[in-house]
Image (cartoon, rainbow, N blue to C red; front, side):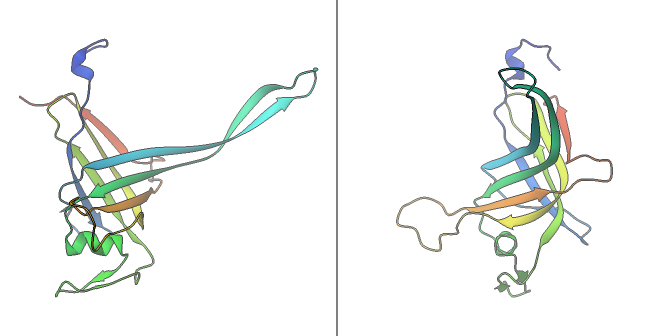
Length: 169
């Protein structure tokens, strides 16, 4: 991998997103995903000394860590809609909305970009619907599904495994 500074370290992310529901043996491709965003969340408690005229911060304790993922999908399939609607999917394509308390499994993104390193991520998640689904739009924009996932802490203590690989020629 190139040593910084190098223009070869610039990154225009592209990739393939797939999901394996808890209890399933295989990953399912979620189709075109124009956005996949990982956000770490760190809460802290700050302590200030009152020993002088101006209080000064003398300690910061990390009290909570978590992570979320936001994925935008623009392929409106029964499987993707079922995740968005937290619904059970019947063999005829019917979805019974909000009948599942949670939609858990393993989410994975594999970097496929032409510019920069291929950055991937795999982790256990629980999907939570996010945003709205427009059955009808007043514009010519494509419909999308926005899914938010709560990343679950793994046995090794991580919130997902990141990979950075050189693109193959």
